[in-house]
Length: 376
Image 1: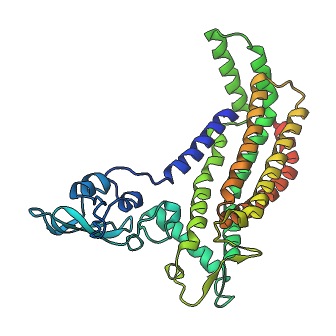
Image 2: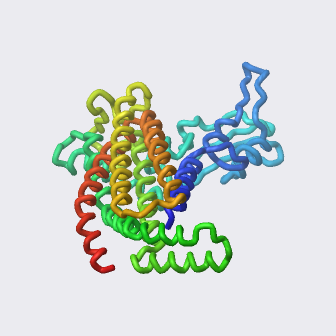
């Protein structure tokens, strides 16, 4: 319920996101890094040490899926690795237990990371969801046939972002409702903390917890409501992956046969990954993100001031932490956006939409506070 706990959960989720997207060199796992590490014999360069059967099957890649064309007595033949769920299919040829050939990397369906993998390669249920989001983006880019053979990526991305944000509005509204209740309850929580300040005995701590829970109960504050913002995270993570991978995916994956996707937008290309060209969009991302966070903190500070109750040391520390997090998130989002124009455009739309949500919520907040105050 405390902001510091929620903050920790959010940071942990962000860390997990970027950890899971990394493609490391894990032994015995079929992935891009391990496959590119397989060294093929070069008759013209005797200094090259090729990979052996042991290197490939035990250390680099893992046990083969198909061994029917391999002679385990002589070490000659072909081993095949194939997976329908992960989408890869490749072979490695051996002569006397030494690698002499392998499928070219561009034909294996192995990619450096999940975010460099085209949509539709894998067949898992999570990939199916991403594929549907990508298909909607594709068909929305020509307004579901109204634009003929003209496909505008920026248009599809705009409509998809607005749809996702609108569907997530109830969660956003519920989160804001919980924020209002926390703001109204804060003076009483501060008084409880001041009341038991410096009293570390078990009985005092138990009474403080009981009184705190009574306040939460009176204002209908619960852990589920505090965790509501985290419900949106899987959606935002999915959209992030779709935007990263959509430009890499051929139109035929979404059923397109006539039109070619136009990724141009103003001075840049939304599939662009050049940092200098993406700098203006990244600055807009940082600016809109900062404005959104600044307005939110300003309104929270105003609400705290109107409460006319002294802030506890813990509350002041939480405020400092949240302020630091605001700057950290702005810098992090701008840094990520500078590496991908599509991500930058997606975040700009999302940030502007959030500003609209925040303004509408702010106008409704006074009426909700009045109603809640009347019930107390």
